[in-house]
Length: 378
Image (cartoon, rainbow, N blue to C red):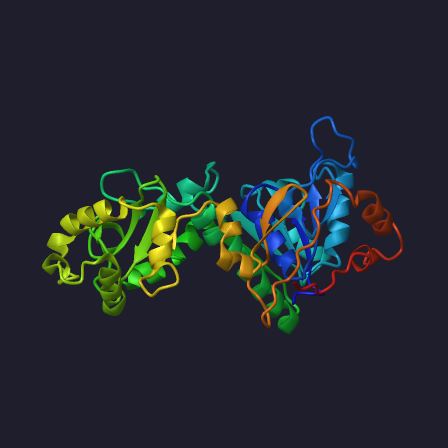
């Protein structure tokens, strides 16, 4: 779908490489510029990184003139650059937006940070949990009696970071093709994770989020909750709508129990949740799957990634696959009913010699055309 779009990635950790992988999954041509490993010769191949699937890997030390020249030659034929340094680092290296966009005025310069390019905390170190704490996105995760927690990397690094950067880059490329002008994309995890809360914030008007953590539908009701089963595993229930709630009571044999008649009586929620905790603790997770799965009670088991890969629904959609010792998920979304087949994982620096040789020739653009991707589907 993105065939012909060319991305230079200055490899870092976390959301930047994921964004570049996501674009590669969708057909973009991505060259990852990786730093030499300690004690490793500049072009020596090393073990591959799963986030580099579908990319070509070049080892270059961008602290040197030679390394900077490789990047500058690459961006001459690129649509976008992705970097994830602290604000000002790329400028000090001589690869800031002004320099790069002078080489290529149509370039979209994608900047991935936690705190953003400006603000009092722009230069501070941080990680996923710090960014979503400050943005407010962590606040409602968990119940009232335990510290809030969220799925590692999902809300901040990927949701609020990588995916917002991807949208920003593609928007910038569309604008560049219409106007001939590039742009700088400031993708900050605090911005993206705050923006992701719009659906939750809008639910205040509906009465779903009315108070602090532990006093809302998703963290204190009996019909939208996670329950422990007899085997120590967990299941989730999300029977918000009255018809789904009624079916849940029917499946649990509680339809005639007067305590459950008033679904939205918040004063009774703690008592009813405690009762359902006892009910669900009476059977194993698989026993509850046999009763509730594939019904309209809004049910799912809590699975590990390895278990999810073996679930019949995930198998039927061919979501997971394993190769080169890595469990991986296929690219998303799907187009015309098909999931794209991701590219292979290159060894570190695997394409250094080839690309550097082409860049030194008379036509540096050949470094890109030599690695054009194909539209593969599964």
